[in-house]
Image (tube, rainbow, N blue to C red; front, side, top):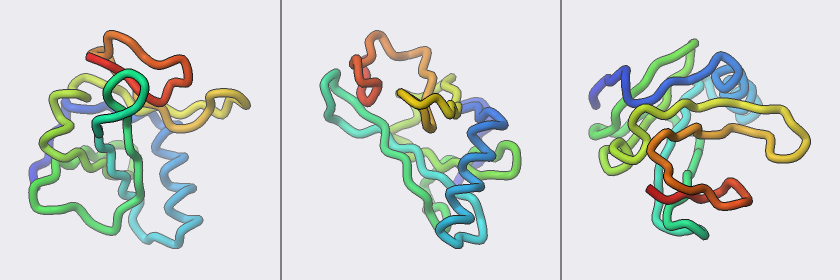
Length: 113
């Protein structure tokens, strides 16, 4: 498990939302996994899930009282990104703002690089 600080930034709003989600699931530590998987309209999509603990090969980003886990295969695809939160009625939720993305699907669920 490595701690890397420049792979991903996390806004205060996103961190607050992760804490709310962790509290709802009665998880004592707010730990979010961000994984990029093949699939979706544009080739890749993000998978976000709450975790109990990091795995040995995870990169751990600590921001605003939460930890975000990124597996080594996903790091090059999210390098320089920001995890943000929007409470907009349409299109709201946790969002990855990825400068490496050359195109995003209209639904915002997948991207290409």
